[in-house]
Structures are given as C-alpha cells and as structure tokens.
Amino acid sequence: MRVIHTLAELRQALAGQNRTAFVPTMGNLHEGHLSLVRQARALGGPVVVSIFVNRLQFLPHEDFDQYPRTLARDCELLAPAGCDIVFAPSEAELYPEPQAYKIQPPAALADLLEGEFRPGFFTGVCTVVMKLFQCVQPAYAVFGQKDYQQLKVIQGMARQFALPVQIVPGATVRAGDGLALSSRNGYLDERERAEATALSQTLQALAEGARDLGRPLVLLEAEAADQLRGRGWTPDYLTLRRRSDLLPPTDAERADGEPLVALGAARLGATRLIDNLEC
Ligand code: PAF
Image 1 (spheres, rainbow, N blue to C red):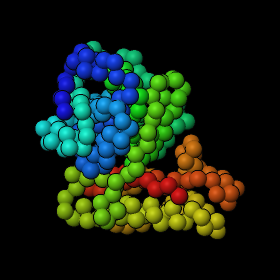
Image 2: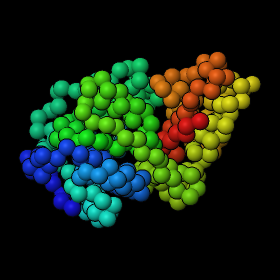
Image 3: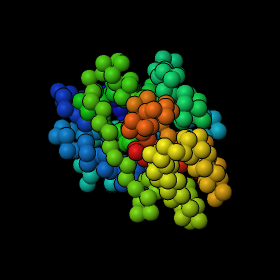
Image 4: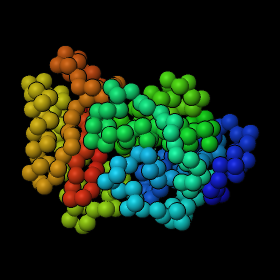
C-alpha cells in the first residue's frame, strides 16, 4: 500500500486505470470505514482511500480543530482491509488557493435535516467530493448509508453532472448494542457511550410506528424527541421521511407502503450523533 500526499504523484500512480474504486474519508477510521474499503476491494480494480479533514464542511463552532488526525493508525488498518493507495493531501495541496468555486446542491434536498442544523455543510461536502473525484477519477465511489442524506446529495450530484462514476452505497456497521459506528463516538465518555444506544432504539421505535396508520407522524416524531430529551439528549430532529427525496410522506403514501427512512440527529453532552433506519 502506498501513502501519497500530492496530486501529481497520485495521477502518476493511477495513470491508465479505469476501474478504480474510491472511498473518501476524513480519517480516524473504524470498522464502518473498513467495511466500505472491503466493498471497494470486491469491485475488482485498485482501491484508493482519501483521508482529508475538509475545513469547508465545518461551521466555525464545530469540531474541525478537534477532529482526530490519526494517519499512522489509519494506514495500519487500511493495508489489511485491501487499500492500495491512501491519498492524504495537506490543505495546501487540495486547496492551494481559497476555494472560491463551489458546488451548490439544491436547497430542496440540502437545506433540510443536516443542512438545517449545519448550514453550508453539503456545499462543503459536494465541493470536496467533486474535487477528490477529479483527483482520483474513480469508476466507483463507496459512501456509507450512515450519512444517508450525504449519500442522496452525492448521488444527485453525480447524476446531474453526468459524472463517470458509479456511487455505491455501503451498509451501516453497528456495535453490538446497536450504536452506529462513527468517528465521533470516540468523543463519548463511558456513561455517554452506554447511553448512546438510545438513538438507534428511538429510531427503531419510530420506524415501527411508521406502519401504524392510526398514529399521526407528528405525534410519533414528538414522542421520539421527548423520549430522548427525557434521557438528557438534545435532539435536532427525529423524523420519518420518504427515501426518495427525504420529504415527509403524505398519509396516502404511508398507507400505500411508500419506502421510508427514520432519520435522527441529537446531541449527547458535547457530541452530536446521527443515525437512520430504512423502514
Ligand atoms: O463522510 C465523510 O467522511 C465526509 O463528508 C467526506 C465524504 C469524506 C467528505 O469530506
């Protein structure tokens, strides 16, 4: 496995490749990332994993500075998972001048849920992903379903810009108690880590309620939020949406079995966790 820090070296290493599978990450890797790498490996071409903490997708008060940079440990995990190239550019390499050109995803998808609580987040994500796609020129790019809205936004970007890359969804990996693996789980102390399972449990209850047509969505969502609040969480949203566009389903769609997803984001102490469950 090679660790590459410059775009010139990356382009040289990938010259002539047309089956590259790409897994973009911000590092601080865990089993969830490694399962995406193994999925990329199974696609048959060379596997590139990027590690880059993207300033553009953090708000000023968020954890950009605190975000763990663990390149040496990440590389130890990546080699046995089947990664061929780690692309770990510096900020000066990826953004040699202020990034004035940006990819603006549609407000109808990007300004709700995560976008409502993290304004500009998806512009930052789309801009760096578009740039990383130009660097790696992958045939496939694997994105975890744990970041459900991000996956939708990237799928839309790839489709509308006719990018020659297939976006491959990767299933969420969970700990034994149901907590979705996330780099931010490392911020939780012991008590918070034990409590954190309540987010997936609450989403499970919300997902089960989705098919109980006697119970209005607003009621189910309010109950879910109250439940977490009662346990000391600060919920941003707990909601049932259509999988297709992340908008609320109508009663008729609910009755007709429209594919739905329960999505949640909530803060436990200083840590903000997100999760989702298709239903
Ligand atoms: O999901 C992430 O880790 C990031 O949003 C991504 C896709 C690597 C872009 O910085």
